[in-house]
Image 1: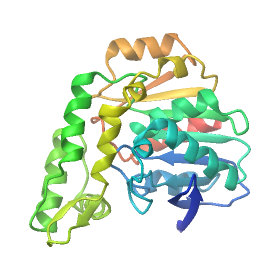
Image 2: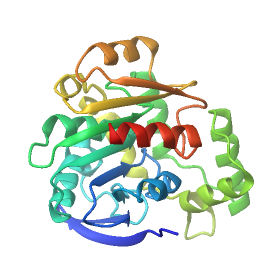
Image 3: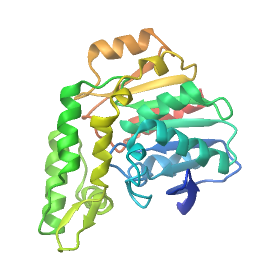
Length: 277
């Protein structure tokens, strides 16, 4: 079985943790998680892709084992892009295939429009478009900046299961346990809460430009695949515009809602086929 290797690199004066799968000499794939995720979210997909690719799964700043927010700009996509440039340079990547879930997809759009020294050849956007309505941003900011505390891990696990099940995610008992283990943090008072730095919420109030990325999307030349859930934050109008402008993305409709582990047979087969196109 192909097992991941855990590594740290200093990028833009921040310690960035990532797991890597496969052989370093293989073509590179980056899988970047959503706003509250970790490098472990898409391990089923990473394990499959590692048969052909060198797969890099970073923890974003404020998540997992990477540094927490040190300066306000750390929560912005522009700083995340600077960190990624640095990371890929140190990994000696000459080109990359990018798979981004939610915020990871937004970062991918910026990089696909910007990077010339290490171009993105294939861009997978998992349930994310170039814009996000303000009403969604306000709700997300409130939840991130004031994380709920739970008296036990099992209470935290039930909350994660109930919340994501209502959003359309379907997992078995062990998958829920594994996801909760990677998303939890134990606090000094013994309570449990989400692992991420609450300061990542700053992005939603201080960087409105992160939620209007059409100027980047329209410059993308990479082959682009939009994976859209049945219960999606990407509106039908936005989806149609994405298919008709910029890279003229291909659309793949999947079951479920905004959050997915991208590990169903259908998702893995679709992504694998796209990356080889």
